[in-house]
Image (cartoon, rainbow, N blue to C red):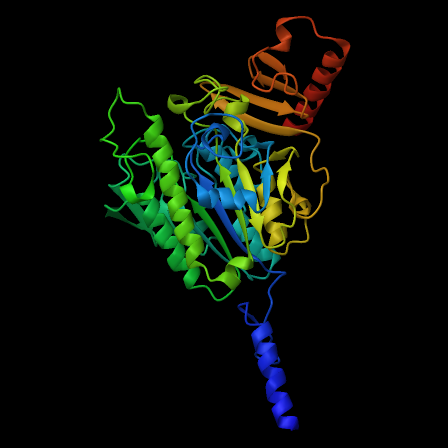
Length: 433
């Protein structure tokens, strides 16, 4: 009888704890891994709020059930700031530093190998507990196609070293430090590579999946991946919006494939973070933005981009209005994986927002190299100041004028506005010195 009870007890334990890859060293029984969630970090390339569901900006929206599910099951961040171009945003995330500290301030700038990447930091902080991979667009080493991102402390890299492709069906795949010509649809290939790597892991993992979609060139994805109908080959003169929307839908289709391939227990132990790296390209900008206020600008259409987070330990849902910057993803992902430090460099962890409403930042900052001049911006959530190295300034009240139509500096400032300007200038000096 005792033997039967013992067998029954062991069976029950095995059933209860069968939903994790962690194993108890004494018993050999797998135990829940709630303190070591997987992290799936997805970056969409050139995706603004006007081109995705969940925001009032824009009227033409893609059919994205998988991205919608990430948003609906978790938190949508309404005040997430990136940089207005892709290399600086990626560098700010992977280092937790503003671009003027790393030298990555514009497209094509190279990240120094001396920088400590997020993947290296996690490895150090957790005693190499996590496996790390970056799949997809790198764009942190200029146009040096010979670079292997694995030299930056990443366990595995495969994808696109350059910033863009000339053809979604003809492109150079880099893997294991070597390049090869690939003729399959790039969004699908990145997904396949991610699925293959995740399936090989025996410990918690951090997957940085950087799609180059929906970045130009405009094209027609495989017809089964989008709902935009029979799109002819794109050429100048055609409306680019259906092609842009189709690329977003194809990306969503592939995100669905990836998520469906992750076993349910493993997916339940995964935090999913989805962002756009900068605003929408000017060719496809939608009202209330214009072609002059989106990507490549420090206006809201260039820097205020989508971020949705859901999954393991994310108990809050709906919209969060905290001021968050792309640098903050460094400390946040590090804390998710077990780092005890919630603030480092220019990065403040907002992991606490997964479970409670609290305040993270008083100011947010972004920057841009505009031709020969450095340009930067700062906001306290109400007022926003834009300035550059030759003395140009603009100031907006984002509460009354969220799309920056009325530059307050074109007229006399009220006492409140003048005090706000002085406050922002002081903080800008503190940040940049």
